[in-house]
Image 1: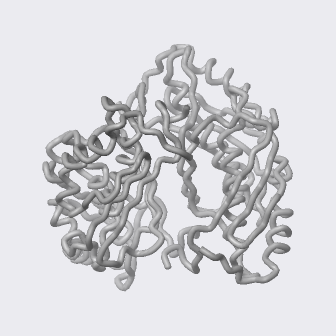
Image 2: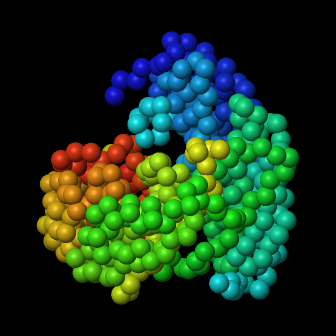
Image 3: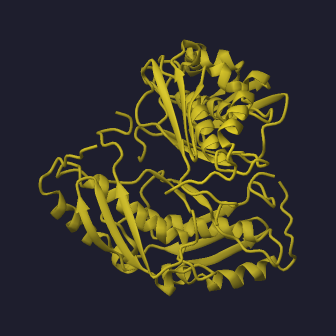
Amino acid sequence: MPQVPADPDFAARVRASFERQSVMRTLGVTLERVTPGEIELVFPFRAELAQQHGFMHAGVLATVLDSACGYAAFSLMPADAAVLSIEFKLNLLAPAVGDRFIARGRVVRAGRTVTA
Amino acid sequence: MPQVPADPDFAARVRASFERQSVMRTLGVTLERVTPGEIELVFPFRAELAQQHGFMHAGVLATVLDSACGYAAFSLMPADAAVLSIEFKLNLLAPAVGDRFIARGRVVRAGRTVTA
Amino acid sequence: MPQVPADPDFAARVRASFERQSVMRTLGVTLERVTPGEIELVFPFRAELAQQHGFMHAGVLATVLDSACGYAAFSLMPADAAVLSIEFKLNLLAPAVGDRFIARGRVVRAGRTVTA
Amino acid sequence: MPQVPADPDFAARVRASFERQSVMRTLGVTLERVTPGEIELVFPFRAELAQQHGFMHAGVLATVLDSACGYAAFSLMPADAAVLSIEFKLNLLAPAVGDRFIARGRVVRAGRTVTA
């Protein structure tokens, strides 16, 4: 579906907010792509973010995905609005093995409330 | 329900595996309590793990909770077994404001498969 | 935690709404217990609600659990409020084998919004 | 991704199993489309499946979606295999208002275990 940002300046607003998410810097995440309702974050493998078998910890993946989804929503929101996750569900289809990971967030339905 | 560890040495095994989870060190998490089927992890607020409003990022909470749940399971498993998350769901009941956080993991049902 | 209903007449209000949930009648569900923030629904095994192996279909369990949770919330709400599920997650720990099932819903945190 | 059924007779096997899910008959669900890894189920609004506001109960939607997803998986499985849900998550984007509903299930990743 076509996604219409409430704020024409959405990209600058997303980038400014992303800069304030200090955990993104800590994890080495960069904001690669900002379009209305769709965000792409990229991050490298880092040994200091691994779990006991050397894979990236599932929670690190969750962290980046949550930000990708949050900023996808934020890109469509009015300039004075804020975004906050209330819940998420993660399915881990395979261990996170690789040098570089991409997290994509996409808005499925935008609205003022969680139901309408 | 009473939880019976398959390995009497479960506590040492949990501690050794936790030491190998380098992301726990990176996030400043310590293993406070290990009992059969129940684990407690503690971690301080750190500005470098915050989201854009200064709260701890939801994904950091997810990371510590996932480890707490994983090690709760691991504490009941045979010595030669490994644990890997396949999915999780997180409900965020309030923004993570505070100096110190506690993550508790508890096994609800232990078994060899996901269904029996 | 102690649960305080916003409406002293909560039990009658829950029962009246439950009567209007025609699907509960269709599935043979009865409202066994109504306390502030906690509800118990009971239902029998019925062959016409089974899946292909003869177990109760997971969705039937989800239906009754969703109502149990919804009415647990409703029991604490003001008289003029309505309840609507926005999402749920179900973990199926074992196949639903039995003659009679009990669904318990309990409010973990009550509030005006999903975050505060 | 291209989906390859392990059993060339997958469609007949899906239809036969669907016939044994008596709850599908009870809810008025019909199997509209069976392709490898993708299933479409259709069902009408029925007042006896409604919740207190007259919408279809979320659990009924969950029931049909669970079957759609289960049969999508089953369509790719060997002839001697069985399918059983271990968990599901449902997001309700809007109240279920309408005369006729379609549930689509699609396999995202097929495998012998939940992780590989």
